[in-house]
Image 1 (cartoon, rainbow, N blue to C red):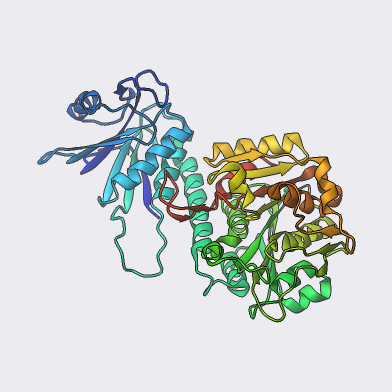
Image 2: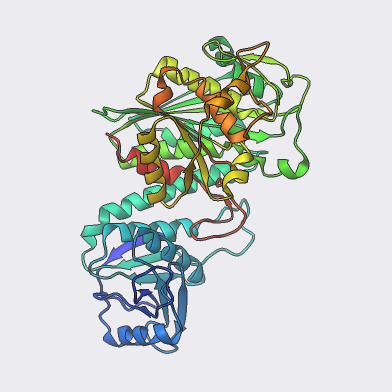
Length: 491
């Protein structure tokens, strides 16, 4: 990651970035841009030049807009004007992301903040810088950004030290989720993923991990995980990761879908749909990273994360459409489509959480359906819950973190589609809306936690087709930022 340093001066950088915003203070407006007052830049000539340059460059100050001005033979040699829109956290995050890309060829950058910059502005700036500068490559070939460090010029660095740490932890854990998701499935099987979690918690006394092997899953009755993983030479696993801070009063269980590759099984996918199925464990990556982040930040809430891991492969031992699976706790499912495998492994984990862990809150995150993108597009997760207050709180946290989700309905008249003649449930009915039916199916495994359960289908926003704002092409790490914000509001 970029090295971020809070400084108060003196500042004579080669590259200096200064914020601009619409003179009307309305983000996205067409009014001429202006510099905020109170920028801690000791060179008045530079400030005067920047103030004159903004209207000359027809800068609007929109969040994410950057204009670079070259000053040969002078210091700074490059002056960047970065639009911050309304000056809120989102505007500063967009500015940080744009600066990371515009100044990617520089080795160092200094960013000046006004005297009255709130802590949220610094958090947004730092997160934008760190998230947009992410790159994943398995080889050293290819051009990498030269930018290695950023100085954030403020009047009082001590005022912002805590929020910079929070932003750095958030970005580092988002990077981890991206790394896990981007890793090719030739490397990433259930055992590999479990080993990454074990390595991450080594020597951390308040973090505990247990990995159930296939024989333990069979002995304890995790029929869904075993069915989905039964067709692969790489056996399934169940990772249980626990953050137990002293004095925690609230216990949250997070469940993340961990299909390390999805062929579709017997209901095999076409090649085009299979190519990116290394991302089918993005929910697992997000909940693991969020739990590690909660520990790193010392959040006073107990978090248990369950990651059912399996590779959905095609072989003589693969489960078939029409098979009946007995889940943890005894509920049975008729597996109508082997390409609807994620809900089978999640069902086991949810049932286990309800029966054995008895948390206060239960949330699952999954790249569950293509219907998520059909309903909401590429950037927005689909959130389901019967609890209005819980749903509103999580949506607020997701929005504040710079992610996006939309609450979807759980209509009662769809429930009849889940009925099977040979089992308790159909796993994937053909009637109705796919993402909604998947959520209704999962709700059947929440028991007395039904009113304290949330589900997010995040298949669409888990992957970006190109660089955009703080997102880098590939895995987005969606969910880490929102979950950490939400967990930070609990006690």
